[in-house]
Amino acid sequence: MKNDLKVCPAKGKCGGCRYQGISYRDQLSIKMMELIRLLGRYGHVDEIVGMEDPLYYRCKVNAAFGIRNGKIISGQYAPSTHRIITVPECMIEDRAAGEVIRTIRALMRKHHIRAFEDDRMSGFLRHVQIRVGRYSGQLLVTLITAKEDFPGCEDFVSDLVKEHPAIRSVVQSVNPDFTSVVLGKTSKVLYGDGYIEDSLCGMNFRISSGSFYQVNPVMAGRIYADAVNMLKLKKTDTLIDAYCGTGTIGIIASPAAGKVIGVEQNASAVKDAGTNASMNGIGNIDFVKADASDYMSRLAKQDSHADCVIMDPPRSGSTVRFMKSMKELSPSRVVYISCDPASLSRDLKWLTANGFRVMRIRPYDMFPFTEHVETVVLITRAGS
Image 1: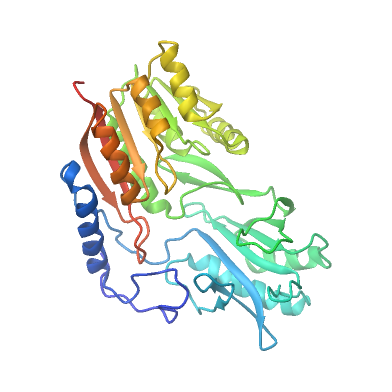
Image 2: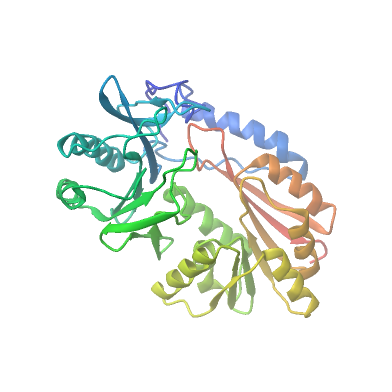
């Protein structure tokens, strides 16, 4: 495990890495103390699983573009502002993404493409998003522009792909609004099929500009594999993957289970999940467009059964409504994957007061140099 690391020149400026300047070993120690403070009341907290190499792990990279002193610049916004902080090389972003962004700056000058200026609400290119297939090496470039008309588009894209043959697709997303949201509501494919593919835990997944896919696939693979192992699934088990998104966890778990049901409200995510299942030849998984709370309550009222539940809610955590529906369904085993220990602590308080018990708490350093921690908790129904 790397410990002595260089300090980013943007330390304290861009707001992306709160733990810059702290040795990696000490970062893990700080996180462990906070985890024990928040979660220790529910049981033993396993030692946090760190990365062997905590650098350049982010496979989703967003860069804001602008103009300073007549020159095109790119980088990250300073906290709570639209002031761009330039960084020669970000220590947590995939290096291939950084190289593409530098090429785009050069090509903008060559093709006379204006960077967007927030204060004037004028210009063309606002942001660039790069998705990197960590294991496939494929790149997806999304150009976020202030308007749809893109003069010289074909020549610009041709030069970009020529410089970076790993680019499999280039997409234009149009966002004319003054907003902190990066992607616009409309988009079109300029090159390729509009997506890339990558593998995780032996399964293949399609990644588009708006797809949810973990930004740190190395740690995500470990987390998902351990989560499935904790459940000790049998071929007779029915597993519900709640908050399933594009189906990643359910698909990874499917070979060990009898049946998997992924539940997700977002229609496009459900469509992507079905595509991902088909790509992997998975025949024992169904995806349902529904609110997970409503769906599980309905199953319980129909006297239907689910042996296990995997829940991976957003940073705000679960809801009492969802947890009540899970209590009604009464699975024997639950894995809760959390990206915020504070909301996890709140939810575990409710669960342990309502017929569930915590069997294992295992944290993972999904986001080195930041205060964020991913935690996997095995929960069983009391008496099971």
